[in-house]
Image (tube, rainbow, N blue to C red; front, side, top):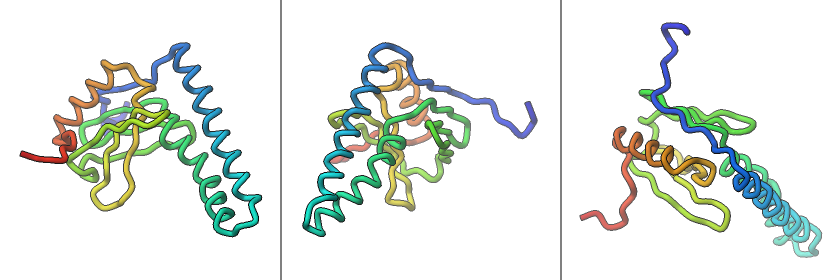
Length: 154
């Protein structure tokens, strides 16, 4: 190990279980069904439906690989790395807003951290990790002054 490399403070790996495999299969089927609906919109005679179908079809794989398929999260002192199936995201704590939120959808239970300058948000699927690891990760974020979003701050 070089002197320039940092040792990770916390590593959160995806859990391995039969339920995760089933979850992965059903989520894949869900996104394939969404793609089928997009194809149906593409073959409609209305140009508006064609455009909507094309945009949704283009973003369906992006949503699957960005929001769903996370291999591990590695936390360092100044930044953390999210390893996904086809790419790696490095996020400095100084680039993120000082708040996170937890959302629930049909398939996802996720942690959302917005960037300061961009309108994009960093999304971590919490269904793929152990509850203990999630709690440690949230404690780690709060130690970096990234707190849970509150609509009404008292």
